[in-house]
Length: 339
Image 1 (cartoon, rainbow, N blue to C red):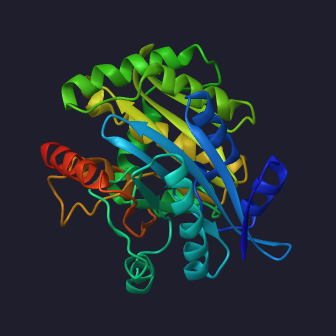
Image 2: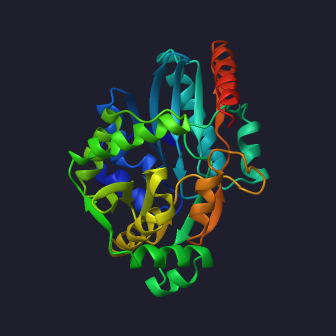
Image 3: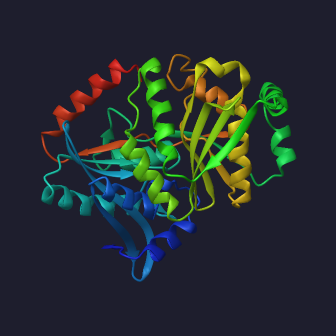
């Protein structure tokens, strides 16, 4: 096998269209978004002769805690995961040295099994102190009819959804206006102060939205009560999957169940776009981690039906001793955030 850089969007997206397990973090537009955010990227294809077997988006992350190479939710392959990782690692070790990166971080979207975890440990990887992107997600197959999807929901979710539908003061609106990102960002910042998390910057949200809008692959949803915005979501539709990527809701409207109706409208839009899966993005087990910050949101997502998908935990491959300073810093940060 050999690695070559892929320079054509059609080849990259065409391969990913054939792959079942994938997220938009490996899409062509996500790579373009990273470039706009001033990150250096490489799009590698792993070939067996003339046949493309896997792709890997690699991002050079330059942060205060250290410089490293990140493969977000990848590499994406059709088969032969063990050989793919071995070939990719050899290439990335050389690239890391050239780029003065202290480690390689791979955030795979492979099923979390003993065999898949051993592939990494046998090559010298270790579990990362933090996750860069979700290591598990809640997913729903949406190929059934709307009536069937509704009937499969948790009884409480159906009840709350009907209440919101019957309330004439609640309206759900869609937007492709870049100007509405400012509204979404303001809501995000407002909620972050109450819930003590660090929100994405307005520039980040604007650039991400703008990049996916080029392919008509993104929508903003606003839930309004008597004309006032009570909840909002930022949904990406890519390669047959709808992704519930960013969301916010104001607690003063919590009794009105507006997020339920907002989610239902996003699910229906995903079906209109011929998506086969809706990815609720991010999952923890509320039974085993009831105090985790994602426990409440996960319970909300589970009400719509679906199943948990657990991925191999984020893996680090140290390239230089500098890595251990980064690992210490990230471990402390994770503990402070109770993650």
